[in-house]
Length: 150
Image (tube, rainbow, N blue to C red):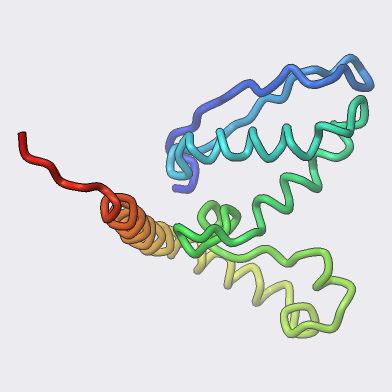
């Protein structure tokens, strides 16, 4: 369902870290497109630039921020496109929020199963929004092109 076809990408080399770590192996499903891998690589390298040898400890927080931030073209977070529901971010756990106060494990498990059944609808909606976004961007770009006949 969510991971019908996967791809792997090797990122790095990063500065040598504890346990001689230099490279990062990234697995991604083809729905999120390889463009996202390139964007993620750029974000990761930019944020880990000053981390030198501690980048393995910093990486989880960078990935969490990336996965839970809404993308403009799709209007969804990568987490939602993968799992069909939004993640409860760490700030919500410490604060009084509706999702935390009204948490019921049994109802939550049932809701997650229902949302996983609907993940294809979420992805289709995101693809439609992405196509609209790309058309708007192309129209804006092409509006500055001057047509000339030869």
